[in-house]
Amino acid sequence: MRIDKYLAHMGFGTRKEVKSLLKSGGTRVNDDVIKSPKVHVDAEHDVITVQGEIVEYRQFIYLMVNKPGDLISATEDADEMTVVDILEPEDHLFHPFPVGRLDKDTEGLLLLTNNGQLSHRLTSPKKEVGKTYVADIEGHVTQEDVEAFSRGVTLDDGYHTKPARLQVIESGEVSRIELVITEGKFHQVKRMFESVGKRVTYLKRTQMGELALDEALDPGEYRELRDEELDYLFELTNME
Image (cartoon, rainbow, N blue to C red; front, side, top):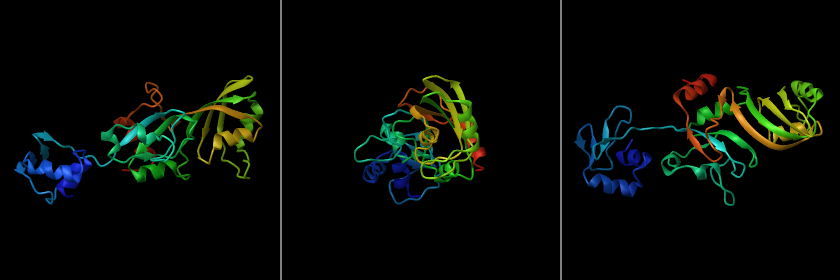
């Protein structure tokens, strides 16, 4: 990789700005002063410093977002604010994207990464990674609903869902439930409840597999995944 591309990727500015930085003589590769932007470096083995500070190369970024109900799960949109728009510049430069999607009015756990392979495996129907939601439902959620969900329900387009685990936390005129599904059809949770004559009034995703949303994150806040969380996701998806 060329040194100018390397430094630009690590947030030291545009290619033009990096060229000016190199000309100043403050960049070293293995103790050799480098001024040419054309010099190639080995990101894994070379020691690269700028003004005496070691630059540690990172290829991938993994973020946990507590998505609020007013952002869309996309990287850009002409009219709406996206989950990527809330990122700090040093995270934005990695060009992360949402792993799957949450509806605009759905809150909770959303992962952002620039690792396409991990994203694909986490969202692949073959992996059947469970997604856990809590929701408020207009109407009494009954044991009959629980049993229907356990068999799978038929949506408005004729699709029969995979079995899902529905737990009633509180039943009433507005019921609070927890639901675990292993697929992600368009508006699936809302449509599943519509199939049994009920309406979702609030929806929040709390887990992907065993990875739980950090409740210390307020809506609109995010953090990098911890090592143990990332190890879990790699194990879950059979990645090295």
